[in-house]
Length: 114
Length: 111
Image (cartoon, rainbow over all chains, first blue to last red):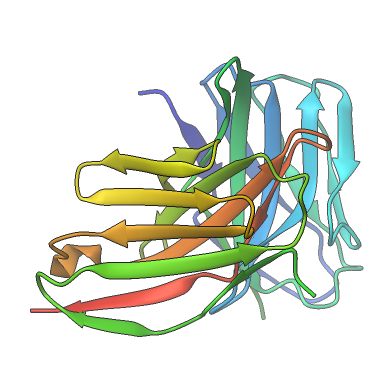
């Protein structure tokens, strides 16, 4: 099946630890994104990448890092510098066509700091 | 001020009623507009995608864009309990290649 796969679905992190969330897509999309969603709130952009080996900071990049070594993969590392990391993390991908641009999401990863 | 504003709700309607959802945006650079449906603890699912001003219909869903007023709407006809979810509007500008979301409106359709 074509789609976006995020793992793990649930993750617990101790304070001071770095954790990495995986995102893989087999849609052959050029662009990939990471969003954060807090309870009862909309999505906020952390990082995005329009092409392999290139990425840009979104609105809330502090305390996060990413890499884009392969077209299909865009892992997100939540570092110990992120002060409030407990949230729902969503990965997305998109492809620009002549009729515009549509963005599709994975099922998300829940990160809880214990 | 947020670039995309959306009433958080909750919006409660009886089954079979029309659900009316609205968003406003402030940036004229937004070119594409989308509506997503998000069930609890799930990723958002793309419902409607529009580019120009006017109406776009898909089954029970109608998306409406008024670029002159910077206003976008989603209407759900013959609402069902399975339509109970959070609905997110989003706007996209090609420059920067990123999607900006409203805060979402929680909808509850009561049987």
